[in-house]
Image 1 (tube, rainbow, N blue to C red):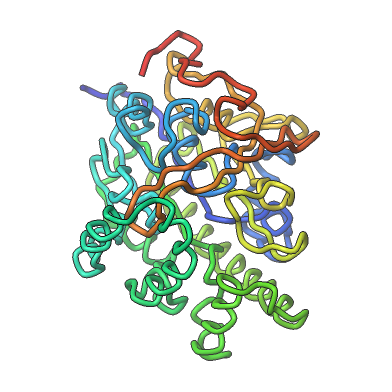
Image 2: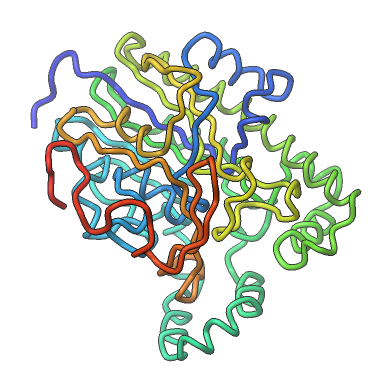
Length: 392
């Protein structure tokens, strides 16, 4: 489709696990806060899901968790409103780069992009995922559940270094290098960047040099496998490593935004900087972003900063509201549901293998309640919620 002469640009940057209190700290992230203060931001934005597996499909399709599908990733049930598909229909060039395995081609995100890079697909053949799938498909579900935790520990040690090793995590500077190689025009682009900072394992390259990779790995192992063994000193180290990830992220964001505003038409370029979810750092006796937990507000609150997109700073926004700001046409707007859903896995979850989930807890920010399945969710299931009645 031929592009309009004055077609705008839209840039979505997702910083995985970025907490609002860290993101909005000018001493920690000076560039991001300067950008925030010169443009627009929300103080009250929240994720509709507690984990990347369901938070990102909601952000990228506008479909609320469990309203159409129980699985992670992009599938045929929700692809009808997938952002790159909508942008292509409307004549945009689409460019996507992700450093997160959960938003890689293994989870169906590589559809309808003019250029796509997920770094993960390059290592899939070496990772042995197809053999893991063959084995796990033959294991009864009850045994899977009882073996899930120890099996994940074993598999994690055998996975490619980019998943488990802070030293080899796909860094934002690698995403930036790829971004600079893309054939981006001055107008008519949708650009999606998913950064793995400050996602665990925490620790910058400088941290690795200073503390040693073995020490950081040992601390990371406790976070994943035995958080109750963490001492107060360990927790302080974890928070400091997380801060360092935020400082590094801020420097790369400055380089990325500066570069994009140099090559794009600034007046017609809309930018959203956000997160898929927040992160817990031990405030309520758990860490990271457990999928079945919503009790820690830091875990589900997300930064929401925009350029050339008006926001009301004191209004409460949800991931689906962000989707409405992203799409290029009112035809695809959705009715946002003001709920965050926590959930449990009902099938074996390994990197590169899609998972099935069941909701178990919900919050509307005023209260938290447990549920026994998706039929008890406080919003419509398997019904189109699009304003124009669009069917998927």
